[in-house]
Length: 457
Ligand SMILES: Cc1cc2nc3c(=O)[nH]c(=O)nc-3n(C[C@H](O)[C@H](O)[C@H](O)COP(=O)(O)OP(=O)(O)OC[C@H]3O[C@@H](n4cnc5c(N)ncnc54)[C@H](O)[C@@H]3O)c2cc1C
Image (cartoon, rainbow, N blue to C red; front, side, top):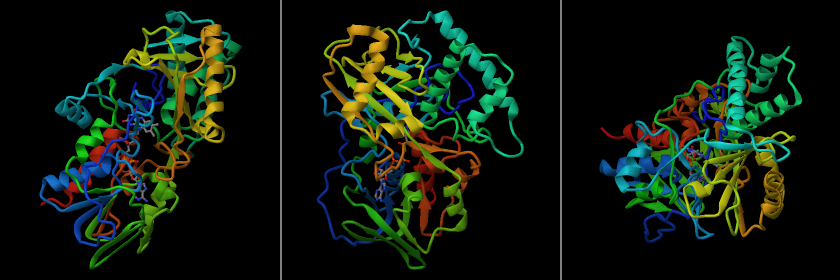
């Protein structure tokens, strides 16, 4: 199942991003703190979009400086290696390996990838009973029927939420308590994939993106291999938070926390969340089309919780473990890290408001909640945790969320509008400028190449 195709259920546990992580290092360059040397092009943001843009431009002989607010490159690709094993707290998967530029990059640098399927899972009921595979298949089939009903609503008029769509699709059906729990679990997994609650997702506009075939693959040694190779040899200035961009007839001026940079042109690749929060002041202001587009898209939240144990106590023959809680959204999916690494680790996924809520409590309490669920699944077999990591993308000041979606009443046209230049000096790239591949690494990559090519004769 494509992560975004939330009406289809080719796979069950639609866990979206994955896990993994050490901080990718930018090329070591002597810092030039107060530099105002005029670059032909300044790229703001050293995520995949910014690095792809800079890489393409530099390879074409352009003089490019990349300004990055964090003290690492990669942005929403973030491989944490603090526990001695790579855990991706941002993106994990190449979504659809066929004709995917990330597949090509991975092959070029010899980065190992491993097949990973959402429908390769074991599923437990709320009381710890493990379901037979045939039962999982019938849950999937049940959802397919509901999804067909939702798709058939295809509102031409006023937009409705995915949740309303589901309610209308099942209106008149008499669901048993078990069936309601199954539906709640399926929607919880899809909310994780979309990084947003069904109550907030547009029914009409969230399924019109593109999808690549060939299945998904993860990077057992960390996704950071991709930003690292893109950044090689580039002039990347870490710790340079951009606060203001002036663009006019004479060129552009980029004001950062470590000095002002002059440029002929600027490519801004910061996340939608940063633009929506007006963290960068533009002068002159962004065109009305861009401002409107910012109101027609939202940032969703997907947060991963890495749980490391002294030993493996779960079945390791499947990629995912699912749990059908009585409480909607409670740790519905765990990724089995043991399926592709030596780590005795599970990675729990949370999406939408559940993901936002875990950012309000301590990591220890988040991990305890996940252990509570695992205890319902495995009883006393669950040993005390050795270590844990909790991602907090919503409160991250360089992201304000995980990836974009179309909220109820929004418009996917906004992705195209955000890709339009604001002036002859100011350009935009990033996942939220990719209508076709929104919310993905390859979408971000292709958007960076798209903007770079505007400046290559
Ligand atoms: C938890 C999670 C799981 C995901 N899973 C997957 C997955 O499995 N597969 C997949 O394809 N996609 C996945 N995604 C989405 C994918 O990671 C993103 O779409 C992609 O990495 C975005 O790249 P980008 O360059 O557009 O933005 P970013 O990577 O966010 O890069 C933007 C950069 O701008 C910097 N920045 C922000 N503000 C400023 C400022 N004021 N000044 C200077 N720099 C600034 C940021 O620090 C960042 O480095 C996931 C995302 C998350 C968060």
